Amino acid sequence: MRPKTFEAHCLRLPAATKVVQWEGTSVFKVGGKMFALAGGFIERSGGFMFKTSNMAFQLLIEQQLARPAPYLARAKWVQLVGNDALPDAELRAYLDQAHRLIAAKLTQKSRKALGLD
Image (cartoon, rainbow, N blue to C red; front, side):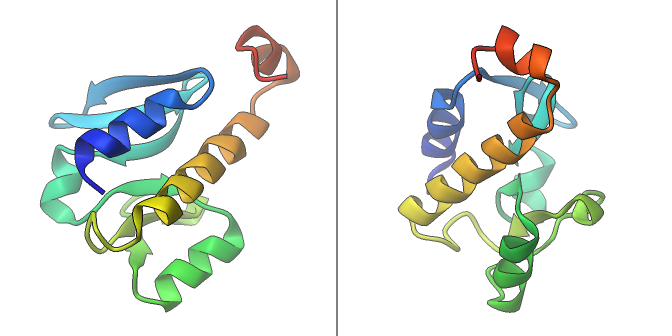
């Protein structure tokens, strides 16, 4: 997936926002909480990064499509071995899941204010 496509998909998700932090890295958030990262230092060290479920974390690493994300692995984040490690449709599904996982951890009040409930 191209970085512009990645960004466009992330920003299409409900209540998603983008900020640029950490050496020009695009940080995609929902309710102020990160769910995906692209560009900047991410590009120099590998592929896109995103939050995963426990099962997806194991699966992507075992299939050598991703590695535990630096600094975020304990929270079950992965970094793809390259931006083209997954077909676009699969990556979109993982990004949707990352968004849902983070949104689910927001308070009910926050979810309601963002139009997620």
